[in-house]
Every structure is written in C-alpha cells, then in structure tokens.
Amino acid sequence: MNKKKILEFDQCNEDDLWGKLCKNSNPELREYFVYKYSPLVKYVAGKVAMGMPQSIEFEDLVSYGTFGLLDAINKYDPDRGIKFKTYAMTRIRGAIFDELRSIDWIPRSIRQKAKQIETVISELESKLGRTVEDEEISKELGISMDEFHSILSKVSGTSIMSLNDIWYLGDDSDELSILETLEAPDNMNPDVLIEKEEIKEYIVDAIKKLPDKEKKVIVLYYYEDLTLKEIGQVLDVTESRISQLHTKAILRLRGRLGRIKSDLVG
Image (cartoon, rainbow, N blue to C red; front, side, top):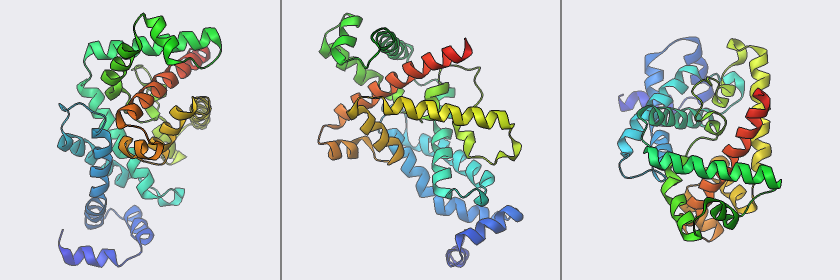
C-alpha cells in the first residue's frame, strides 16, 4: 500500500473508516487495516511463542495469526461497541491455536501427562471439597515434588491457550466457542447466546476459586495481557515459576469445568 494512501487514511476518524468498510467492501480500506494492525499479530504471536517449544516457529505463528486478523476485519461490527483491537486480539489468538491444534504439535506422552495431572486434581478436589496443594497432587501421582515440578515444566506448552479453549478443548464434538459471543447476534439462536453467557459465568466462577497466586497469573495473562516474564516481574518470582503456576491453574480449571460439563450433560 502506498504511503500517500496510508497518510490519507491516518488522518481520518477510524470509526468513520469502519463505517465505510461495513457499508461498502473497499479493498483499499481493508488493506489499510491489515497494514495498521499487522503489528498486533506479531505481538499476540510473540506472547504465544513464549510458552511454546523451540520447534514452533515464530513466523508460523504470525502466519496463523494473520488469518485471524483478516477474519476479524471481515466480521467486525463497530455498532457492537467493542474496540477493534480487543476483538482482533481474540480472533488472532483463536486462529493461532486453531492451527496449532490442527497440526497436533503436542507429543502424545506430554499430552497424557497433562491429562493425568488434570484428572488427579479434579478427583482430589471433588473428593476433598477444596483446593488441593502440590504435595497432595504429587503424593497421589506417586512422585516426588521435584518430579512433579519437572512434569509441570514439560507440559507448560499445552496450557498456553485461550481461555475459550478451557471449556471445549479435547472434545471434538463441541463446535461452540465463547469466541463467538463477540460476533453479531443476528446469526445466532437466542438459546445459544444464553448458553454461552452461562458458560462464561462458569469460567469466571472457577477462576475466582483458584488459589490466590494462580488466580493472579490468569488475570494478568489473559485479562491484563502481560507476558509470563512481565508477570514474574510483577509478582517478584521467576518466569519458570509463573509458567508452573499458569499450568496448574489451567489444569485445575479444566478439571473443575470438566466436572460441571459432565454434570450438565448427565
């Protein structure tokens, strides 16, 4: 896109530009928004990359995220009162994780370990009726605390995901996504909208019940948009410790929400 056109659009009110794009499919305007928000794709991809193994290339994440940005531009409705940046970040992150799931990048052995910890946490908390400690989890697994923390480090990449995935991950029959709650409701069944709102309430409630440090990590990572390294600086602990807290929080949430989901289905 030529600089003259970019400068011309830069001087316009962005809300007015979105209004024009929604009314008329203007290729130049679409190209401008891709140009303007492409740094956002790299930012989100950078956040995701921090929790991924070295085999996952940053440029690949950017490529996946770009599809999310294009999708966001095509579907954005300024009349919904949601800022485009907020909407786009959700779409970009969702597109990256959709592609990562499709290429099945997590080794089966790591996936099994993550599921084992998730199951133990879920069963213990259901049995005891409270949040369980690391020592209790490691004892139930029959391993030492050092071994438990080592496993957490190995499975950390499996937990760097959108909060939307906590409810649906691992169940291919589920086609709903909380991400869709940001879309215009015109195309949705009212019953579906109500169900999604209920699911969000389940997730928020489950987050509130997390141990304090885990809750802080989840809030800072997903809602305040800090990286794991930045969260470590805020809480004055190492990045690896934050990664462990994040992993435990996600496994704990998946276990709790899995029980709720089973109860609803049952």
